[in-house]
Image 1 (tube, rainbow, N blue to C red):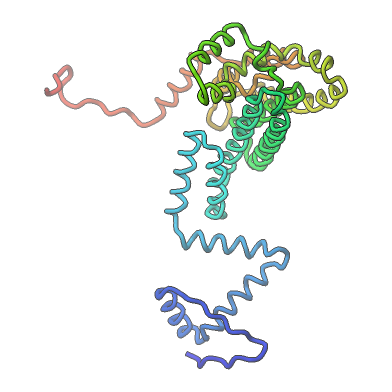
Image 2 (tube, rainbow, N blue to C red; image 1 turned 45 degrees about the vertical axis):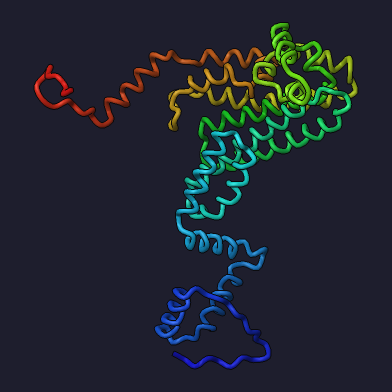
Length: 365
């Protein structure tokens, strides 16, 4: 091993505490390469610096890979399990935070990166829907400013989800991801209308069916104090949101013209943009010929889901896109056809185990 080189005035000493295993490796490597330990560390730092001066993007990327390799797969799989758990529990903020931590582990794993893009976009879209429902729960005029703030956050969350989806779709046109894109645009169209109509008791006063109103009244009679207030201000359920759009969907333009005519043109423009994007994606998805190359190969299951999906309530009830939305059901195939295709997959798969012994023999007790 060479003797340590003398430190010049231009050089600054740097003390690094290394684990014993790394220190031993560095000492052995220094001996084999006939280079000082300081020279090895200097060469590594110089290499990272030379990767790119502009924001150090390549150097940062390499460091992430090195750190991920050092941590090993255990932390990666642990975070992956937590993301799945958070999605199951509908804790969208957790999913987004776990995804942020997990990105450091998957620089060299493109397939896992796609999986994470899907999970994170799904969380942002659902978080946006949660914020939007939260805004709709503020039915008092005094809370209109707070509701407006939540609608604004809902928009940003949904748009963030769409941005991430586009990154995914640039590499793979998966049918489920395309379907989620349609859902996000449909919610954004709904948000534009819901915010413009205001939150001054619209949900509670006259846009629910008699059955919904009576059910809420019965529940409220049984509650007192904070519990009553909490129930009154809770987020609307899928059923209540469905009743809202069943009532307001066909005539929201007339309501808005009477109450806020000055913003009707702007709202219609935003609604047109998102509703066209949503129905366009669905039409492109369901009108494609032949089975999809990815699972689900049949689009019928997505069609059945779309029929009752609260994310698509706007398309289902808006006067200008309702007919196009309803016409999508004509592309559905019978469930028996799907069964026949799945049966063929089963026949092509591994054979089932046959029972041993004589035919008709009893199983032991």
